[in-house]
Every structure is written in C-alpha cells, then in structure tokens.
Length: 162
Length: 178
Image (cartoon, rainbow over all chains, first blue to last red; front, side, top):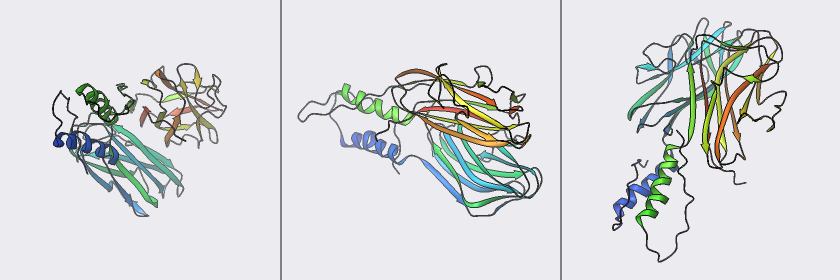
C-alpha cells in the first residue's frame, strides 16, 4: 500500500520524477486505497468475561480513527452485553483512561435468549501517529453472552483530521 | 475544523507552461482536502444525568448541546448518531430527527417534521438499547449550516442513558452522480 506524504509546496522549478511519484502518484494511491483493517468473527463467539475476539493493528499518521463494529448478540439471562475498545493495551475508548466504564463504549440490555443487533460507529480523535492496536472487548453483567450470526465485523480506519 | 479548500480541478492544455501556483492550488491543496476530510463531531461520555423528555413534539436534545456547525461547499452531508436510549414505558416509541439551520427537519425537509421523525424505535420499558443512526442529506447548498439533534416520544419518558457514550457527527460527503 502506498504511503501518504504531506504534499510539498511547489516552487518554480524543474519537475522531478521522484517528486511526482512521491507527492502525486503515491498520495493519490493512498487516498484511493484508504488505510484500514478489519476482522470478522465466526458464529457463536462466546463472551465469557472480558474476551478479545477482534484485534486489529493500524499504522496511522496522526489523524482521527474511525472504529466500527456490527454484530448480533444474545445473553442467556436478561442482562447487559457490554462492548468497549482498548487501544494499545492501555486506554479504553469509553473513558480514555486505563479503566473501562461500567457499561463500556456501548451496551444493550437484552431479554434472556433474545437476539439484539449491536453497532459501534465511533470517531476516536487526537490519536498520535504510530502503530496502534485496537482490541474489541465484550462482556456481560451477568449471564453468558454470545456473538451470534457470524460475520461480525470490526473495522478500524484512519480518518481525517478535525 | 472546517476544511473547504477544494478547487475544482482545471482542464490542462497541451503545451502550456506548468506553474507552481497551479500545482499548489490544483494538486497540493486538493490532496490535503481529500486527506483531511471535512467534518465536525461531538462526543459525550457518561454524562452526570440521563437526558429525558416527555415531549410528544420534537424538542432539542440538551440545550443546543447536540448541535454541530459545518461549512460545506455544495456536497451532500453524512450524518451519524450513536447512543443508548429507551422509553420508561413498554411498547412506546422514541423518535429522533435532525433540524438544519434552525429551520427544517431532515425527515420532511420542511419546518414540520414527519410524525415518525427520521429515526425511531419501540422500546421495552427501561431497557437501554444501543443505536447507530445514519443518513445522507442531499441537496444542501454551499455555506455554513447547523445540524441539531431533536427528539420526542409518543408517550412515557424518553431517555438517552447516562451510562453510555454518545457521539454525533456530520461530514461533507460527495455529490450524487446518478
């Protein structure tokens, strides 16, 4: 994949192939390709305690990062399924601290054995440049949670800049 | 941030002298615009209290808190709202709509919103449920525009839950070509 290079300020000068390739070709290719990673999950992923079925690593260049997840979840008891994302094995998106909030980044209170869709579309801002690991965690307050239906999708994309 | 530094790409002519002004305007500025994008976002993590409403007509969520402004240059607008909400009374609804420029609602594109709003759900009593809502608003003219979240219920009390993270985002998108 092409890398992004902040495009140069052109002066009245002779155009060099190297500049054209770096500043124009590679940058256009970068915008076309986009910079993202994603994971899908198999059916019936158990959520017994805090588990991490999805882990994605992305090299970013100081831009915001869009975190998305969609899936179908159920709980054996009438209680919550809770989702959060931990970055760099350090901070949680629910709090931006090393402690997750009580009901994570988002949660569903599910009637026992019912299926609910769950979705996250969250822009994580002020992300420093570098390689970052994004790990989706899921848990329940009580009961056994299961991600059902297969093809749950967890996607991380380098976005723009506020 | 509002990033409106887009220049419609020129038609290059054979034999003309390529100038640095053209390269900076047509290449550098436009590449940066595509790279940085143009959007506004508001995030709230675990507010001190839930938002509630018993209004059966649309009212602002919070007091101009869920309101974003964005300068756009004639393109469509992608709107996204994530929250966890419910109604205190079973089988009742919570409705959301977006009011643009303190003038019209996206559901109807008039000053009178549709009765079902732009998005709605039927709730089990006091049962927080996760939602991600999306909409592409087309035909919005160039300029500064405000986008504000409105909501209502048909009965009972609507709640955007305190134990959650909510996010509202508007982004200048592309133009429809078909």
